Image (cartoon, rainbow, N blue to C red; front, top):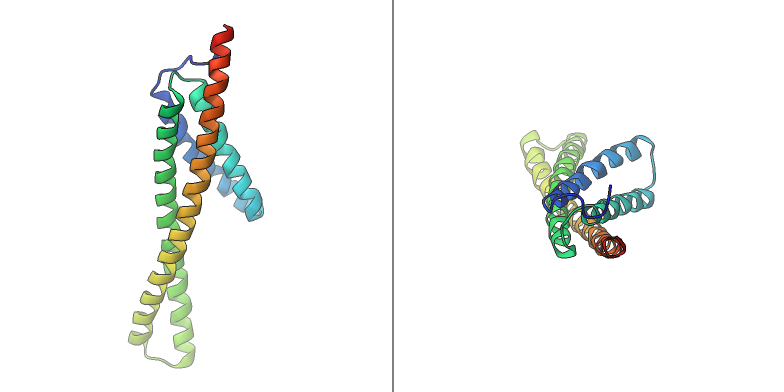
Length: 159
């Protein structure tokens, strides 16, 4: 495809497509037991590549691409916050319940403490994961948009 051949709105498809591609890649990486640093690098590359093509192939400006990838990065980080906090709430609650049962505590007290501990730990971990995901995905999208916009301008000027 040629540079700038798609409509402006298509940049949003690339922005939200980056989320889908990144989730699919994360699932595959987890099945292959790839390390965290490699996963972060792959996810960084995917968001950057989608941003590059989102600006290069569409009539969208660099600024429009940056806004689209800012919004998709926010959506991605909020989704990761909820998934992370949900998983850790459940895991911490189960661990606390089992520990309380072994120690001989009452089931009602253990359930109350388990819920509180799970909620606090899940929320903190979710915030951490969400912030890191936002920073990484937005910076990758920003850089991809800037490079894609420059390449598109050069390609259109040469044509």
